[in-house]
Amino acid sequence: MTVLVDAAVWKWQGARWAHLVSDESFDELHGFAQRIGKRRLGFQGDHYDVEEVDRHRAIALGAEAVDSRELVRRIREAGLRRRGDKPSWQRIAYAPSGRALDLGSRLVAFGDPGMRLRAMLPFVRSLDQASRSGLYVDDQYLVMLFDWVGPEAVVELEGIDRVWAGEPRADGERSLELFVRR
Image 1: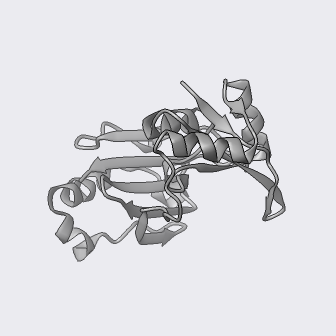
Image 2: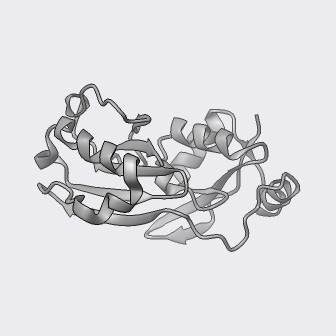
Image 3: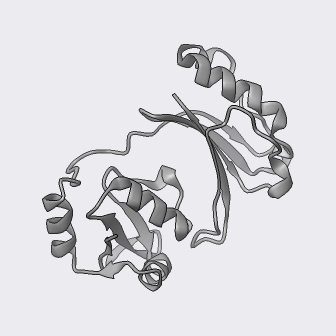
């Protein structure tokens, strides 16, 4: 297992950011990122952007600190560099606080996965407490994303391939992601 992180030198929104990558596989990277509280939707094609506090957490959990050139060299040699790729996630629905998503006909083209997500909605409790929610899609999954509404929010979700209740991120917030394989 080799997860790499470079120095947090990139300034954005009042914070310093670093890159978290794996020179083994994307599965390894996603698993490690989840351990430090990063959402899958934060994947940037070949890396996660991590704030300085998350960088320190990653190093404490075994990530190897390297400079940016070494990081790029190693993921390129591993065949995991996706230069210029943008995240493949597309947001197809968004709901502000207190509103449930209107899945309606937007998911008809997704067939069974869309129907499973729609059938799952009655089981999501306390949506009125969620500050926001969204529906995203990529090549493999449809994902419903909610700001954390507590462990009682989800009960016995049949047809959901994966539920991820995130650890607090650097901003202290948590999220809940429900994955349905396409």
